[in-house]
Length: 289
Length: 282
Image (cartoon, rainbow over all chains, first blue to last red; front, side, top):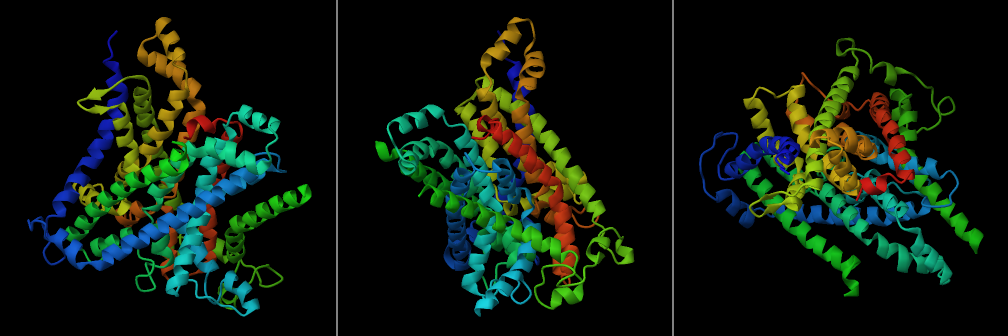
């Protein structure tokens, strides 16, 4: 039997994707070796000058990177804990189970930038409902203009937006677990907590790893929320890598330099995700061996 | 002890419900306010605390020439770009996913898993990295500020999602299904379109829902790659934010943009509760 037709299935999608992406990728690498800026637009060749500048004299980039790591790890950790908790809550015997499932899914269906605009009014320091409530206790926190608190605000909005995604993946996993394991545990007289530690959690390990990785990938691109909520401010206290590249590339038109940053960003991302995958596998599964 | 546990459970559900619903209720209330009820501090209940007006909603249908915002046109643009890009991504992604699930490929050291990973890994690309080269590429082809240009870019965003969901789904569709069809005299394409595809509706629905969500909610690409001719809904609404902040029309517009995907939430939940998602999402 001949298998030539298998290419007819695969190639249209593969080629379309490559065709759209090949130019941007090659162009980014080439652009990163040029000094393209607003005074001097054009693809001249300056060697690795941009990379030297990035690695030796731009602490702001690396600060933005550590901020990105902080935001991604905290938000995804919170989303995982909360998402798992919510999935367990509406997994079985709850009144109006399906109603709450729909409700808990809704935030991920909404457009992040648009909901962030709403959040910005919610956290408005003098006219918003949050401070209206807190002022009863004599508190008026500066949610958007305090360097520490603005980080918390970004995290709250991200958790609101994306916990449902974690919830969806984990609930889908919970609903597909085999009933036999729980039956056996019940017969052995295990309580709810023991059942969770020895049955549910280990069975959920592969799904947990998958869900965390997907969320980390998406979280590492965080940009929309920050653009609308704080524009990286106050100062640079909520500026992440994407946003810094956006400022350098599309506001100051230092195209060559921002391409070098983009390329470095991508490489660091791929390396750290590989490391994180290995750590996660060890944490969730490798304990036994 | 048991009733304490149950109380705690419903308390947790109630708290999270309040957190989820809060911003929507606030937006709903704000959409009926006017300048004086917004600037005089937080107000919640219409008639009791402020006098509701429909200005925030009315302004959305007026053309800019008459002092309105006109979100009907960006709404249609968003709808068009999202559905077109989703349809293309699902069609091409499903075919590729079927090939990756059923046949063995080997190009040098590149095997099936590597090709699947190549598709999915496109999600790692931060939009800001792609935006500058896309800007230059689209302007070369004269596709800047057009629907076609945006659809091209959105395919890169959406096809990885389609492939990711469909490969896992096809891996769970028994191979005997295709084999029986082939033995009955179908050619591979007939086997796929007449036998496998009709049995893959749940996977297709889930993949479509995810493409629609991620297409509809994207902001950055349309923000960078369009100006005046083709504006998408998120860009138009965020632009409202940067002017004098008319909170009322902002809230009304936000609620309109969120509304279509509420339907998606119901569909996703239906498939989730019937257990059809477990195969499609892993």
